[in-house]
Image (cartoon, rainbow, N blue to C red; front, side, top):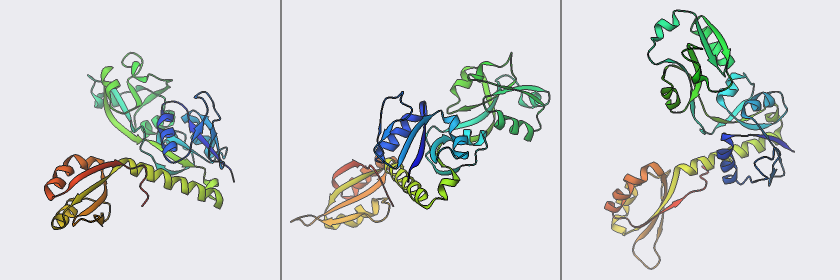
Amino acid sequence: MLLKFVLPKGRQFKSIQTLLNDAGIKLAGSERNYRPACNDPDLEIKMLKSQNIPPLLAWGRHDIGFAGKDWIEEQSAEVVSMLDLGFDPVRIVASIPEDWDWEEVKARKLIAVSEYTNISKRYLEKEGIDSTFIRAFGATEVFPPEDADLVIDNTSTGTTLKENRLKIVDTLMTSSTQFIADPRALDDPAKRSKIEDMVLLFESVLEGRKRVLLEMNCDENRLEEVVNALPAMKSPTISKLFRQDGFAVKAAVLKSEVRELLPRLRAAGAADILETPIRKVMP
């Protein structure tokens, strides 16, 4: 059984490579190598531009890969999203010059520019906007006001739009990196089992990144207070200290809670508190 696994070149690759490494899937080769070697003999790796991945999976040329939800939607690719990784989150937005009135702009025939041909045309039709559409090839924000009235583009912070004196008037969708599969690969029991195992590994890595392991000691008469202060995933692990009356307590907690949690634990009677990174959390 061999899975044809396609990875996106460009800015998405670094975060995906880190995820693969953390999941135990190691790639070897230079950044210019379109067919990197892999330590997993069940995986055949190829590198392509992100925009090309959804249709190629939908056509059965590859089994699994990564792509932004925006390009899956843009190409109406019939693939299965196995996991939303949350990487590179963006909004697909409609923008006009900052000193224009959106209601007035919509009331007349306008020129719309975007790299997203299908997403844009569906939006314009749904909104009943009379328009001429121009397919852009990057840098859509440069078109208004001389060459376009409306741009549809992705943005993470909106900063580039603001710097070019544009304002967001509508959000069409949100997008982030997806782990996707060809439906036909899921019909093969051996391939499906491998893909689901990969999903489990990716989920465990992503969950591990959210948490740290806290370890601490406490006296027996303060154990209840310490345990009550811990927002553990389930119940914390508690063990008797060797040749002492106290206890050792371990719990996996969210990183976001640690700053406020440590003073509470100290006040509850915890001592010798250690914080350790977690590589994976597998429920």
